[in-house]
Image 1 (cartoon, rainbow, N blue to C red):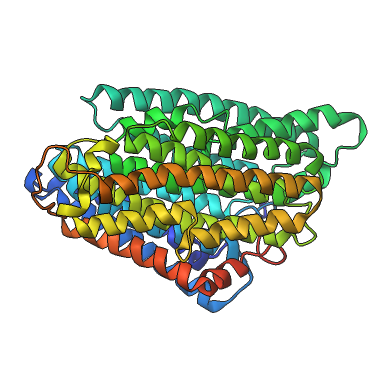
Image 2 (cartoon, rainbow, N blue to C red):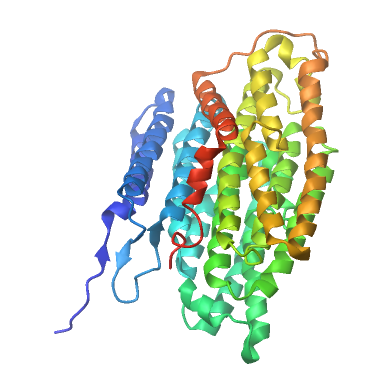
Length: 503
Protein backbone atom coordinates (compact mmCIF):
# COMPACT_ATOMS: atom_id res chain seq x y z
CA UNK A 1 0.00 0.00 0.00
CA UNK A 2 1.15 3.50 -0.79
CA UNK A 3 0.90 6.20 1.86
CA UNK A 4 -0.12 9.65 0.72
CA UNK A 5 -0.15 12.83 2.76
CA UNK A 6 -3.58 14.38 2.38
CA UNK A 7 -3.48 18.12 1.73
CA UNK A 8 -5.31 20.25 4.27
CA UNK A 9 -7.70 22.72 2.63
CA UNK A 10 -8.83 25.84 4.50
CA UNK A 11 -12.31 26.29 3.05
CA UNK A 12 -12.89 29.55 4.91
CA UNK A 13 -9.85 31.07 3.22
CA UNK A 14 -11.06 29.65 -0.11
CA UNK A 15 -14.64 30.89 0.41
CA UNK A 16 -14.54 33.97 -1.90
CA UNK A 17 -13.33 31.85 -4.81
CA UNK A 18 -15.90 29.14 -4.04
CA UNK A 19 -18.77 31.65 -3.93
CA UNK A 20 -17.70 33.13 -7.27
CA UNK A 21 -17.38 29.67 -8.85
CA UNK A 22 -20.88 28.78 -7.63
CA UNK A 23 -22.10 32.13 -8.98
CA UNK A 24 -20.67 31.41 -12.43
CA UNK A 25 -22.41 28.03 -12.61
CA UNK A 26 -25.68 29.43 -11.23
CA UNK A 27 -25.87 32.36 -13.65
CA UNK A 28 -25.04 30.06 -16.56
CA UNK A 29 -27.77 27.59 -15.61
CA UNK A 30 -30.40 30.23 -14.83
CA UNK A 31 -29.78 31.88 -18.19
CA UNK A 32 -30.71 28.61 -19.93
CA UNK A 33 -34.21 28.49 -18.48
CA UNK A 34 -35.46 32.08 -18.14
CA UNK A 35 -37.35 33.85 -20.95
CA UNK A 36 -35.74 36.69 -22.87
CA UNK A 37 -37.73 39.45 -21.15
CA UNK A 38 -36.33 38.37 -17.76
CA UNK A 39 -32.66 38.20 -18.67
CA UNK A 40 -32.07 41.06 -16.21
CA UNK A 41 -32.21 38.43 -13.47
CA UNK A 42 -28.70 37.28 -14.42
CA UNK A 43 -27.32 40.73 -13.61
CA UNK A 44 -29.10 40.78 -10.26
CA UNK A 45 -27.75 37.33 -9.41
CA UNK A 46 -24.23 38.38 -10.38
CA UNK A 47 -24.41 41.36 -8.05
CA UNK A 48 -25.60 39.16 -5.18
CA UNK A 49 -22.80 36.66 -5.70
CA UNK A 50 -20.17 39.41 -5.81
CA UNK A 51 -21.44 40.82 -2.52
CA UNK A 52 -21.71 37.28 -1.16
CA UNK A 53 -18.06 36.64 -1.99
CA UNK A 54 -17.22 39.80 -0.08
CA UNK A 55 -18.64 38.41 3.17
CA UNK A 56 -15.88 35.81 3.79
CA UNK A 57 -13.32 38.49 2.95
CA UNK A 58 -14.76 40.56 5.80
CA UNK A 59 -14.88 37.61 8.20
CA UNK A 60 -11.29 36.68 7.38
CA UNK A 61 -10.23 40.26 8.06
CA UNK A 62 -12.15 40.38 11.36
CA UNK A 63 -10.58 37.15 12.60
CA UNK A 64 -7.23 38.88 12.34
CA UNK A 65 -5.06 35.91 11.38
CA UNK A 66 -1.88 37.20 9.76
CA UNK A 67 -1.62 34.50 7.11
CA UNK A 68 -3.69 31.55 5.97
CA UNK A 69 -2.26 29.09 3.49
CA UNK A 70 -5.35 27.86 1.68
CA UNK A 71 -3.79 24.47 0.93
CA UNK A 72 -1.24 22.98 3.31
CA UNK A 73 0.78 19.87 2.78
CA UNK A 74 4.00 18.64 1.17
CA UNK A 75 4.88 20.89 -1.74
CA UNK A 76 1.70 22.96 -1.42
CA UNK A 77 2.23 25.31 1.52
CA UNK A 78 2.78 28.95 0.61
CA UNK A 79 1.72 28.74 -3.02
CA UNK A 80 -1.74 30.24 -2.52
CA UNK A 81 -2.14 32.31 0.61
CA UNK A 82 -4.59 34.74 2.18
CA UNK A 83 -2.89 37.61 3.99
CA UNK A 84 -3.87 41.20 4.68
CA UNK A 85 -2.56 42.30 1.31
CA UNK A 86 -4.71 39.70 -0.46
CA UNK A 87 -7.82 40.59 1.54
CA UNK A 88 -7.61 44.29 0.73
CA UNK A 89 -7.17 43.61 -2.99
CA UNK A 90 -9.90 40.95 -3.08
CA UNK A 91 -12.32 43.44 -1.53
CA UNK A 92 -11.29 45.98 -4.18
CA UNK A 93 -11.89 43.54 -7.05
CA UNK A 94 -15.25 42.37 -5.73
CA UNK A 95 -16.56 45.88 -5.10
CA UNK A 96 -15.29 47.06 -8.48
CA UNK A 97 -17.03 44.10 -10.11
CA UNK A 98 -20.26 44.97 -8.31
CA UNK A 99 -20.13 48.58 -9.52
CA UNK A 100 -19.49 47.34 -13.08
CA UNK A 101 -22.62 45.16 -12.78
CA UNK A 102 -24.56 48.30 -11.83
CA UNK A 103 -23.11 50.10 -14.84
CA UNK A 104 -23.95 47.17 -17.12
CA UNK A 105 -27.54 46.42 -16.15
CA UNK A 106 -29.39 48.87 -18.40
CA UNK A 107 -26.64 48.97 -21.03
CA UNK A 108 -26.86 45.22 -21.63
CA UNK A 109 -30.66 45.07 -21.44
CA UNK A 110 -31.33 48.00 -23.77
CA UNK A 111 -28.52 47.18 -26.18
CA UNK A 112 -29.83 43.73 -26.99
CA UNK A 113 -26.63 42.00 -25.89
CA UNK A 114 -26.30 38.45 -24.61
CA UNK A 115 -26.76 39.22 -20.93
CA UNK A 116 -26.31 35.82 -19.29
CA UNK A 117 -23.05 35.08 -21.08
CA UNK A 118 -21.80 38.60 -20.38
CA UNK A 119 -22.22 38.21 -16.63
CA UNK A 120 -20.62 34.75 -16.72
CA UNK A 121 -17.58 36.32 -18.41
CA UNK A 122 -17.55 39.17 -15.89
CA UNK A 123 -17.68 36.82 -12.89
CA UNK A 124 -14.99 34.61 -14.42
CA UNK A 125 -12.68 37.58 -14.90
CA UNK A 126 -13.27 38.77 -11.33
CA UNK A 127 -12.51 35.25 -10.12
CA UNK A 128 -9.15 35.43 -11.90
CA UNK A 129 -8.43 38.74 -10.17
CA UNK A 130 -9.32 37.35 -6.77
CA UNK A 131 -7.01 34.41 -7.46
CA UNK A 132 -4.21 36.79 -8.46
CA UNK A 133 -4.31 38.47 -5.04
CA UNK A 134 -3.47 35.18 -3.29
CA UNK A 135 -1.05 33.71 -5.82
CA UNK A 136 2.54 33.26 -4.64
CA UNK A 137 3.69 30.82 -7.30
CA UNK A 138 4.44 31.26 -11.00
CA UNK A 139 1.85 28.66 -12.00
CA UNK A 140 -0.98 30.15 -9.96
CA UNK A 141 -0.05 33.66 -11.14
CA UNK A 142 -0.16 32.62 -14.79
CA UNK A 143 -3.43 30.70 -14.38
CA UNK A 144 -5.00 33.67 -12.60
CA UNK A 145 -3.78 36.06 -15.30
CA UNK A 146 -5.28 33.97 -18.10
CA UNK A 147 -8.46 33.43 -16.11
CA UNK A 148 -8.99 37.18 -15.89
CA UNK A 149 -7.75 37.98 -19.40
CA UNK A 150 -9.55 35.50 -21.66
CA UNK A 151 -13.08 36.58 -20.63
CA UNK A 152 -11.97 40.21 -20.98
CA UNK A 153 -10.95 39.58 -24.61
CA UNK A 154 -14.47 38.40 -25.37
CA UNK A 155 -16.15 41.18 -23.39
CA UNK A 156 -14.23 43.81 -25.36
CA UNK A 157 -15.87 42.52 -28.56
CA UNK A 158 -19.32 42.10 -27.01
CA UNK A 159 -20.93 44.50 -29.52
CA UNK A 160 -20.43 41.86 -32.17
CA UNK A 161 -22.14 43.83 -34.97
CA UNK A 162 -20.07 46.92 -34.28
CA UNK A 163 -16.88 47.24 -36.33
CA UNK A 164 -15.02 49.19 -33.64
CA UNK A 165 -15.91 46.62 -30.99
CA UNK A 166 -14.66 43.78 -33.20
CA UNK A 167 -11.44 45.69 -33.80
CA UNK A 168 -11.12 46.31 -30.06
CA UNK A 169 -11.48 42.65 -29.21
CA UNK A 170 -9.06 41.47 -31.92
CA UNK A 171 -6.36 43.98 -30.96
CA UNK A 172 -6.71 43.19 -27.28
CA UNK A 173 -6.62 39.45 -27.94
CA UNK A 174 -3.66 39.38 -30.32
CA UNK A 175 -1.47 41.69 -28.27
CA UNK A 176 -2.56 39.95 -25.06
CA UNK A 177 -1.60 36.52 -26.37
CA UNK A 178 1.77 37.86 -27.49
CA UNK A 179 2.40 39.44 -24.07
CA UNK A 180 1.40 36.21 -22.31
CA UNK A 181 3.83 34.22 -24.49
CA UNK A 182 6.67 36.61 -23.64
CA UNK A 183 5.84 36.45 -19.95
CA UNK A 184 5.58 32.65 -19.97
CA UNK A 185 8.98 32.38 -21.60
CA UNK A 186 10.42 34.62 -18.87
CA UNK A 187 8.77 32.45 -16.23
CA UNK A 188 10.30 29.33 -17.76
CA UNK A 189 13.76 30.93 -17.48
CA UNK A 190 13.13 31.80 -13.83
CA UNK A 191 12.00 28.23 -13.18
CA UNK A 192 15.16 26.91 -14.83
CA UNK A 193 17.29 29.12 -12.58
CA UNK A 194 15.53 28.33 -9.30
CA UNK A 195 14.34 24.79 -9.99
CA UNK A 196 11.03 25.83 -8.43
CA UNK A 197 7.95 27.88 -9.29
CA UNK A 198 7.53 29.14 -5.71
CA UNK A 199 8.25 32.88 -5.57
CA UNK A 200 10.30 32.65 -2.37
CA UNK A 201 12.58 30.05 -3.96
CA UNK A 202 12.99 32.27 -7.02
CA UNK A 203 13.77 35.23 -4.76
CA UNK A 204 16.58 33.27 -3.14
CA UNK A 205 17.98 32.13 -6.50
CA UNK A 206 17.77 35.39 -8.49
CA UNK A 207 20.69 37.30 -6.98
CA UNK A 208 22.40 38.57 -10.16
CA UNK A 209 25.52 36.64 -9.19
CA UNK A 210 27.38 33.78 -10.86
CA UNK A 211 27.42 32.73 -14.48
CA UNK A 212 23.63 32.94 -15.02
CA UNK A 213 23.27 36.71 -14.74
CA UNK A 214 22.26 37.11 -18.38
CA UNK A 215 19.49 34.52 -18.13
CA UNK A 216 18.27 36.08 -14.89
CA UNK A 217 18.07 39.52 -16.47
CA UNK A 218 16.19 38.24 -19.52
CA UNK A 219 13.75 36.29 -17.33
CA UNK A 220 13.01 39.32 -15.13
CA UNK A 221 12.57 41.67 -18.10
CA UNK A 222 10.28 39.28 -19.99
CA UNK A 223 8.02 38.75 -16.98
CA UNK A 224 7.76 42.49 -16.34
CA UNK A 225 6.95 43.09 -20.02
CA UNK A 226 4.01 40.67 -19.74
CA UNK A 227 2.53 42.60 -16.85
CA UNK A 228 3.38 45.95 -18.44
CA UNK A 229 0.92 45.06 -21.20
CA UNK A 230 -1.80 44.35 -18.66
CA UNK A 231 -1.32 47.71 -16.92
CA UNK A 232 -1.02 49.48 -20.33
CA UNK A 233 2.39 50.94 -19.54
CA UNK A 234 4.24 52.70 -22.36
CA UNK A 235 5.37 51.35 -24.82
CA UNK A 236 3.01 48.40 -24.28
CA UNK A 237 -0.13 50.56 -24.20
CA UNK A 238 -1.06 50.66 -27.88
CA UNK A 239 -4.06 48.36 -27.42
CA UNK A 240 -5.71 50.50 -24.76
CA UNK A 241 -7.17 53.54 -26.63
CA UNK A 242 -8.79 51.54 -29.45
CA UNK A 243 -10.00 48.81 -27.09
CA UNK A 244 -11.43 51.31 -24.62
CA UNK A 245 -13.25 53.21 -27.37
CA UNK A 246 -14.61 50.15 -29.16
CA UNK A 247 -15.68 48.05 -26.19
CA UNK A 248 -19.04 48.60 -24.44
CA UNK A 249 -18.53 51.44 -21.96
CA UNK A 250 -19.08 49.25 -18.83
CA UNK A 251 -16.40 46.89 -20.14
CA UNK A 252 -14.08 49.85 -20.69
CA UNK A 253 -14.64 50.89 -17.08
CA UNK A 254 -13.89 47.34 -15.96
CA UNK A 255 -10.68 47.11 -17.98
CA UNK A 256 -9.44 50.52 -16.88
CA UNK A 257 -9.87 49.76 -13.18
CA UNK A 258 -10.11 46.11 -12.15
CA UNK A 259 -8.01 44.59 -14.93
CA UNK A 260 -5.31 47.23 -14.47
CA UNK A 261 -5.30 46.69 -10.71
CA UNK A 262 -4.90 42.93 -11.19
CA UNK A 263 -1.88 43.53 -13.39
CA UNK A 264 -0.34 45.70 -10.70
CA UNK A 265 -1.01 43.03 -8.07
CA UNK A 266 0.94 40.46 -10.09
CA UNK A 267 3.76 42.94 -10.59
CA UNK A 268 3.83 43.78 -6.88
CA UNK A 269 4.15 40.22 -5.62
CA UNK A 270 6.89 39.47 -8.13
CA UNK A 271 8.92 42.56 -7.23
CA UNK A 272 8.59 42.18 -3.49
CA UNK A 273 8.92 38.39 -3.26
CA UNK A 274 10.63 37.07 -6.39
CA UNK A 275 12.96 39.99 -7.27
CA UNK A 276 13.98 41.65 -3.98
CA UNK A 277 17.69 41.24 -4.84
CA UNK A 278 17.34 42.28 -8.48
CA UNK A 279 16.55 45.98 -8.11
CA UNK A 280 19.50 46.83 -10.36
CA UNK A 281 17.50 45.24 -13.21
CA UNK A 282 13.90 46.22 -12.61
CA UNK A 283 14.48 49.66 -11.03
CA UNK A 284 15.78 51.43 -14.18
CA UNK A 285 13.28 49.50 -16.30
CA UNK A 286 10.29 50.53 -14.17
CA UNK A 287 11.66 54.06 -13.73
CA UNK A 288 11.79 54.62 -17.49
CA UNK A 289 8.36 53.03 -17.96
CA UNK A 290 6.85 55.22 -15.23
CA UNK A 291 8.30 58.40 -16.74
CA UNK A 292 7.24 57.49 -20.30
CA UNK A 293 3.79 56.31 -19.23
CA UNK A 294 3.00 59.50 -17.34
CA UNK A 295 4.35 61.80 -20.03
CA UNK A 296 3.04 60.16 -23.19
CA UNK A 297 -0.37 59.42 -21.65
CA UNK A 298 -0.85 63.04 -20.61
CA UNK A 299 0.50 64.64 -23.79
CA UNK A 300 -1.67 62.51 -26.08
CA UNK A 301 -4.72 62.97 -23.83
CA UNK A 302 -4.48 66.73 -24.41
CA UNK A 303 -5.29 66.22 -28.11
CA UNK A 304 -8.31 63.94 -27.71
CA UNK A 305 -11.80 65.02 -28.72
CA UNK A 306 -13.53 61.79 -27.66
CA UNK A 307 -14.06 61.50 -23.91
CA UNK A 308 -13.56 57.72 -23.80
CA UNK A 309 -10.23 57.98 -25.63
CA UNK A 310 -9.29 60.84 -23.32
CA UNK A 311 -10.08 58.69 -20.29
CA UNK A 312 -8.11 55.87 -21.93
CA UNK A 313 -4.98 57.99 -22.12
CA UNK A 314 -5.77 59.35 -18.67
CA UNK A 315 -5.78 55.73 -17.47
CA UNK A 316 -2.39 55.22 -19.12
CA UNK A 317 -0.95 58.27 -17.34
CA UNK A 318 -2.47 57.23 -14.00
CA UNK A 319 -0.67 53.91 -14.41
CA UNK A 320 2.57 55.87 -14.60
CA UNK A 321 1.85 57.48 -11.24
CA UNK A 322 1.15 54.05 -9.75
CA UNK A 323 4.42 52.73 -11.19
CA UNK A 324 6.35 55.57 -9.57
CA UNK A 325 6.53 54.05 -6.03
CA UNK A 326 7.29 50.61 -7.47
CA UNK A 327 10.27 51.94 -9.42
CA UNK A 328 11.98 52.98 -6.19
CA UNK A 329 10.52 50.28 -3.91
CA UNK A 330 13.81 48.95 -2.55
CA UNK A 331 15.56 52.30 -2.71
CA UNK A 332 13.38 53.38 0.20
CA UNK A 333 14.54 52.30 3.65
CA UNK A 334 10.90 51.51 4.42
CA UNK A 335 9.83 49.29 1.53
CA UNK A 336 6.32 49.11 2.99
CA UNK A 337 5.79 52.80 2.16
CA UNK A 338 6.00 52.07 -1.56
CA UNK A 339 3.62 49.13 -1.29
CA UNK A 340 1.19 51.16 0.77
CA UNK A 341 1.27 54.02 -1.75
CA UNK A 342 0.44 51.67 -4.63
CA UNK A 343 -2.44 49.94 -2.85
CA UNK A 344 -3.98 53.21 -1.65
CA UNK A 345 -3.69 54.65 -5.16
CA UNK A 346 -5.41 51.62 -6.69
CA UNK A 347 -8.33 51.88 -4.24
CA UNK A 348 -8.92 55.60 -4.77
CA UNK A 349 -8.39 55.39 -8.53
CA UNK A 350 -10.97 52.61 -8.78
CA UNK A 351 -13.68 54.67 -7.07
CA UNK A 352 -12.88 57.81 -9.08
CA UNK A 353 -12.53 56.26 -12.54
CA UNK A 354 -15.59 54.04 -12.23
CA UNK A 355 -17.57 57.13 -11.22
CA UNK A 356 -16.33 59.05 -14.27
CA UNK A 357 -17.41 56.23 -16.58
CA UNK A 358 -20.80 56.07 -14.84
CA UNK A 359 -21.35 59.71 -15.82
CA UNK A 360 -20.19 58.99 -19.39
CA UNK A 361 -22.74 56.16 -19.65
CA UNK A 362 -25.53 58.34 -18.22
CA UNK A 363 -24.83 61.28 -20.56
CA UNK A 364 -24.50 59.03 -23.62
CA UNK A 365 -28.04 57.76 -22.98
CA UNK A 366 -29.22 61.15 -24.24
CA UNK A 367 -26.49 62.53 -26.49
CA UNK A 368 -25.60 59.21 -28.17
CA UNK A 369 -22.14 60.69 -28.59
CA UNK A 370 -18.77 60.32 -26.97
CA UNK A 371 -17.43 63.63 -28.19
CA UNK A 372 -16.27 66.06 -25.51
CA UNK A 373 -18.17 68.81 -27.34
CA UNK A 374 -21.44 66.97 -26.60
CA UNK A 375 -20.93 67.84 -22.92
CA UNK A 376 -21.45 71.52 -23.69
CA UNK A 377 -23.94 73.13 -21.31
CA UNK A 378 -24.47 69.89 -19.37
CA UNK A 379 -25.09 71.87 -16.18
CA UNK A 380 -28.21 73.50 -17.66
CA UNK A 381 -30.11 70.21 -17.98
CA UNK A 382 -28.18 67.72 -15.79
CA UNK A 383 -26.72 69.68 -12.84
CA UNK A 384 -26.34 66.56 -10.68
CA UNK A 385 -24.31 64.70 -13.29
CA UNK A 386 -22.22 67.83 -13.89
CA UNK A 387 -21.35 68.13 -10.20
CA UNK A 388 -20.50 64.43 -9.99
CA UNK A 389 -18.32 64.54 -13.12
CA UNK A 390 -16.54 67.61 -11.76
CA UNK A 391 -15.80 65.74 -8.53
CA UNK A 392 -14.39 62.74 -10.37
CA UNK A 393 -12.29 64.78 -12.78
CA UNK A 394 -10.93 66.96 -9.97
CA UNK A 395 -10.04 63.80 -8.05
CA UNK A 396 -8.21 62.35 -11.06
CA UNK A 397 -6.31 65.63 -11.26
CA UNK A 398 -5.34 65.33 -7.58
CA UNK A 399 -7.16 68.45 -6.37
CA UNK A 400 -7.89 68.52 -2.59
CA UNK A 401 -10.00 67.62 -0.73
CA UNK A 402 -10.99 64.75 -3.02
CA UNK A 403 -9.54 61.25 -2.84
CA UNK A 404 -7.14 61.69 -5.73
CA UNK A 405 -5.01 64.21 -3.86
CA UNK A 406 -4.22 61.67 -1.14
CA UNK A 407 -3.37 59.00 -3.72
CA UNK A 408 -0.90 61.30 -5.46
CA UNK A 409 0.43 62.55 -2.15
CA UNK A 410 1.29 58.98 -1.13
CA UNK A 411 3.02 58.29 -4.44
CA UNK A 412 5.09 61.49 -4.27
CA UNK A 413 5.95 60.93 -0.61
CA UNK A 414 7.24 57.43 -1.35
CA UNK A 415 9.40 58.84 -4.17
CA UNK A 416 10.78 61.72 -2.09
CA UNK A 417 11.44 59.50 0.94
CA UNK A 418 13.56 57.28 -1.28
CA UNK A 419 15.88 60.29 -1.70
CA UNK A 420 18.79 60.13 -4.15
CA UNK A 421 18.64 60.67 -7.88
CA UNK A 422 16.09 57.92 -8.56
CA UNK A 423 13.49 59.23 -6.14
CA UNK A 424 13.87 62.98 -6.68
CA UNK A 425 13.99 62.76 -10.47
CA UNK A 426 10.84 60.65 -10.80
CA UNK A 427 9.06 62.95 -8.33
CA UNK A 428 9.93 66.00 -10.46
CA UNK A 429 8.68 64.27 -13.63
CA UNK A 430 5.51 63.27 -11.79
CA UNK A 431 4.90 66.84 -10.59
CA UNK A 432 5.22 68.22 -14.12
CA UNK A 433 2.82 65.60 -15.42
CA UNK A 434 0.31 66.29 -12.66
CA UNK A 435 0.11 69.88 -13.93
CA UNK A 436 -0.25 68.76 -17.56
CA UNK A 437 -3.05 66.34 -16.63
CA UNK A 438 -5.03 69.11 -14.97
CA UNK A 439 -5.34 70.88 -18.34
CA UNK A 440 -7.44 68.25 -20.09
CA UNK A 441 -9.58 67.57 -17.03
CA UNK A 442 -10.37 71.30 -16.81
CA UNK A 443 -11.25 71.29 -20.53
CA UNK A 444 -14.17 68.95 -19.85
CA UNK A 445 -15.22 70.99 -16.81
CA UNK A 446 -15.28 74.12 -18.97
CA UNK A 447 -17.49 72.40 -21.54
CA UNK A 448 -19.97 71.33 -18.88
CA UNK A 449 -20.13 74.59 -16.95
CA UNK A 450 -19.44 77.38 -19.45
CA UNK A 451 -20.21 76.28 -23.01
CA UNK A 452 -23.69 76.34 -24.58
CA UNK A 453 -25.70 73.21 -25.35
CA UNK A 454 -24.62 72.16 -28.88
CA UNK A 455 -28.09 71.36 -30.25
CA UNK A 456 -30.16 73.45 -27.85
CA UNK A 457 -31.88 70.36 -26.44
CA UNK A 458 -32.16 70.80 -22.66
CA UNK A 459 -34.38 67.79 -21.98
CA UNK A 460 -33.34 66.33 -18.59
CA UNK A 461 -31.43 63.07 -18.56
CA UNK A 462 -33.23 60.14 -16.98
CA UNK A 463 -30.67 58.19 -14.96
CA UNK A 464 -31.66 54.57 -14.16
CA UNK A 465 -31.61 53.45 -10.54
CA UNK A 466 -28.61 51.16 -11.08
CA UNK A 467 -26.54 54.04 -12.46
CA UNK A 468 -27.65 56.26 -9.59
CA UNK A 469 -26.46 53.61 -7.13
CA UNK A 470 -23.08 53.35 -8.89
CA UNK A 471 -22.69 57.14 -8.88
CA UNK A 472 -23.60 57.28 -5.18
CA UNK A 473 -21.08 54.57 -4.24
CA UNK A 474 -18.25 56.10 -6.25
CA UNK A 475 -19.07 59.68 -5.28
CA UNK A 476 -19.24 58.96 -1.56
CA UNK A 477 -16.02 56.95 -1.70
CA UNK A 478 -14.19 59.71 -3.60
CA UNK A 479 -15.32 62.39 -1.14
CA UNK A 480 -14.85 60.40 2.06
CA UNK A 481 -11.40 59.09 1.13
CA UNK A 482 -10.27 62.64 0.41
CA UNK A 483 -11.84 64.38 3.41
CA UNK A 484 -10.97 61.57 5.83
CA UNK A 485 -7.73 60.12 4.44
CA UNK A 486 -7.08 58.39 7.74
CA UNK A 487 -9.65 55.76 6.75
CA UNK A 488 -7.77 54.74 3.64
CA UNK A 489 -4.48 55.32 5.44
CA UNK A 490 -5.39 52.66 7.98
CA UNK A 491 -6.49 50.32 5.19
CA UNK A 492 -3.20 50.94 3.44
CA UNK A 493 -1.25 50.41 6.62
CA UNK A 494 -2.27 46.79 6.84
CA UNK A 495 -0.68 46.21 3.45
CA UNK A 496 2.80 47.18 4.63
CA UNK A 497 5.41 44.82 3.27
CA UNK A 498 6.64 43.41 6.57
CA UNK A 499 4.09 40.87 7.72
CA UNK A 500 1.50 41.02 4.96
CA UNK A 501 2.80 39.92 1.55
CA UNK A 502 3.66 36.48 2.77
CA UNK A 503 5.46 33.52 1.24
